[in-house]
Image 1 (cartoon, rainbow, N blue to C red):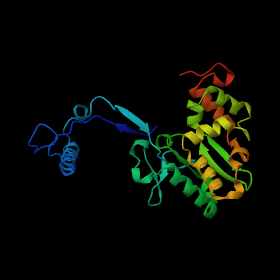
Image 2: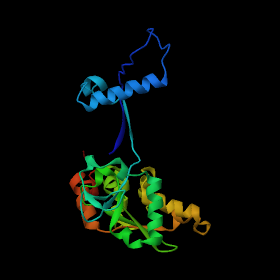
Image 3: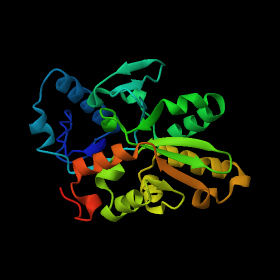
Image 4: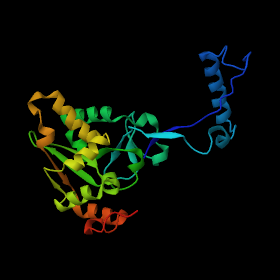
Amino acid sequence: MSYLHHYPMLLEVPGMIEDTTVGLSGEKVAAALRAMADRVEKGSPDLAQLLGRGPVACEKEDRWVWRSIDSPKVVMKATGGWVEVEPDLIDLEDSCDSMKAASLLIKASRNAPANLETAIWARPENIGGTPIILEMRDEPDGLTFRTDISDFLAFADAEAVRDLAEADWGGPDQGQLMEWLREDNDPAVSALMLRQSLDPELDGFFESGVSVRVSDPDAAARFVEACRPGLLEGEGPRP
């Protein structure tokens, strides 16, 4: 996952006249932070000594990139054009949050729907493999959004994964899957919900008018077997 880390940090603020916070100002703290950034970029101080052994807290980032469905590690730059890049080297400028991604999906559905068949929004850490594509079809108008459900298959509750497989990897009643994607801020699901809020005539369709289908059930089954052996045979999840 892509995470926002929180580290404890000792910041040296020079020029204080007392051993308390008297005289401490935003300007002095900002100057100390800039000086520290300069030292870090030059290779000192030692990061482990500065930040400790690890973060005291971390939170999952709402960060997504537009990736090619067929070509691993190929993403679109914010300035346009496709590049091949390692997941940990993606520029922050080439990513956006889920609501921005959802609005871009809706715009593409109106102006360039063919683009929705060749690329999807994915978390940066998931651009390296071949995605397991889920097609979510809005039945009232036939519009289809696609997303990668590799994380769902790998980490979701075992019963939810079995339910999807037992439903022949699709169907209109996949509430657990849709709720999992919704809680993960999946842009494709956000786009469906956003369209509903923008179009009163579609009121309620998200709960009853969206059918889902895994585009390659065999690939999905192989993926589950590789990362959670025996799960689809009822033996339960394994590390």
